[in-house]
Length: 334
Image (cartoon, rainbow, N blue to C red; front, top):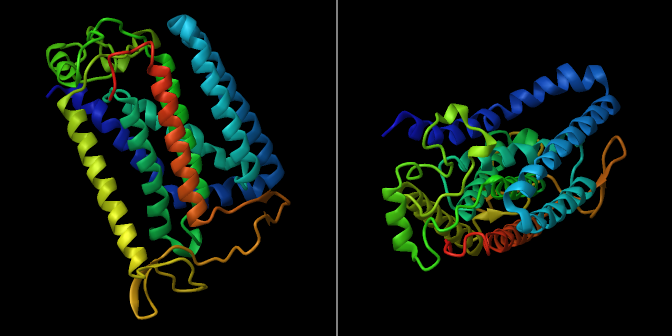
C-alpha cells in the first residue's frame, strides 16, 4: 500500500485524537491563561471576530461552488443557508460561551479530511457524527467531576459541524460525468474503482500530484467505492446496531440511570438500586431555560431531546446530500 494511501486514511484519526484527547488540559489552560486574565467580555468579542472570519472564508468558497456546479450551485447555496440558520439557532439557544462555536469548524474539518479517502458523503457524515458522539462520551467518562452530564448540546454542535463539512465537500468536488455510466449498478461502480488507478484509493482526483500539494482545483468526485470504504461502512453499521441493542437492553433492564445527584467521587459506572448502571447525569436541570453567571440564557438538552434532535439533523443532512447528488451523479445511490 502506498504511503499517500496510508497517510490520507490515518490523517483523520490523528486529527481526531489531537483535538479530542487534550480537551480538559486545553480547557484548564484556556481558563487560566486567557479567560481569567482577559475577562469574559473580551474573549467573547474575539470569538465573535473569529466566527465572522470563518464565515467570510466559507462564503468565499461559494465562488468555487458557483464555478464548478453552475446551474446546480443554487441548490448548494440553499442548503448552506439552512445550515447557517440551524447554527444560528444552536448558537442562540444552546451555546453558553461563544468559544463553543469551535465545534462547528472542528467537525467540518474532520469531514473534509475523511473526504480524502472516502467517496460516499453519507458514510463521511456517519463517521464524523459518530466521532462527535464518541468525543463527548469519552470526555464525560474520563472526567465526570467536571463534565457533570453527557453533553447532548455539544453533540448537536458536532453533528451540525459534520453536516457543514459534508455539504462543503460536495460543493468543492468537481462532478465527473460519465465516469461510471448512468446505468451502472453498485457492483459495476466497485469494478470501476478497482481499475481506475487515479481514483481507486481516494475521493480526490490527484493522479499526477502528491496529496501534500492538493489544490482546490484538483477536487473531483470519483466513481465507485473501494473495498476499504465498503469494509469501513460495514464496520460502522454493525457498531451502531450493536450499540443500539446495548442501549435498548440497558434501558429495559434498568442499567441506565438518568440522574444520580452526587457531588464527590463521581463514577459514570456505579451501583444504583443494586444494579451496576451507567449514569447519564449528575446535575439536575428542572427549569427549561438556564441563566449563566454572565447573563446568557440557554437550554440544556435532555437525553431524549438530544437523541431526537441529533437523529433529525442526521436524517435532514442525509436527505440534503441525496438531493444535491441528484442530477450531478445520477448513477450513485450509495
